[in-house]
Image (cartoon, rainbow, N blue to C red; front, side, top):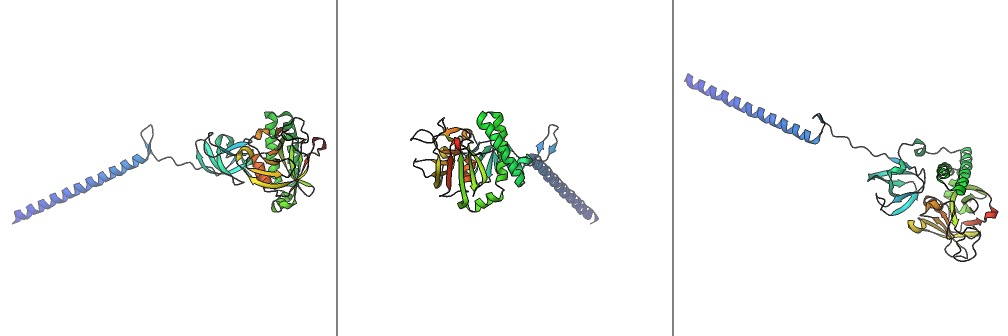
Length: 317
């Protein structure tokens, strides 16, 4: 009886030892499997050490354009259709990045793709809001006037680069003035004077200039008053806006404000040829940067008076 009891106890010990071995092996196997999965998810360095996966780099939230008359396209490729152009300093919200392009939503509501090469996400001066004062606006306007005049005469890269930066500073401040905000609320108070000598279109509140825009006009070399259909001159005199419309980028570049004249098809509109601004280049219309045409569109209405002055009658910007 004692031998049987010893035998049963020995069997019991063997069973316990076997069960313990199985559990230990299972635990070790599970641990190895887990480690293997973790290694699969990790990067392996040259030294053979596992490291954590690289964190996804977050996109910057905002950017600003560092070129001038920069194309905005329908998709992230230079082969995609142009839908807009934007000026130096134009700010936008970054929605996506692909193929060296940012998908951008601009302050005027336009959305499209712009090459990263012409964008800054770190320039504090371009990304910060302008600080308005009457004195700052007057100084910026004077600088714009001087640099734009130099550009229209020389039309080279050096004068262009200086002009584009001065225009950005001036336009940023002009849009913060009390007079500008009054016109935004009540476009019925707006009137426009186009000056052929200075290649400018200026928006007035009563008799006070509020916002000046660079333009191009009729390509006839004499720059004179229109005399016949097809002479590529811009008519001079007092007119008014008959109607406004939204157009494709080519050939009207998004916004048109059409004048009531005895000549058909004369208007103020954006251009898909931004390099023509500051010169005699059109078939008779007044051209603006595409981005500027969107801005002006919001400041005028049907019936807004427009005066186009002859070169000899220039009053300055």
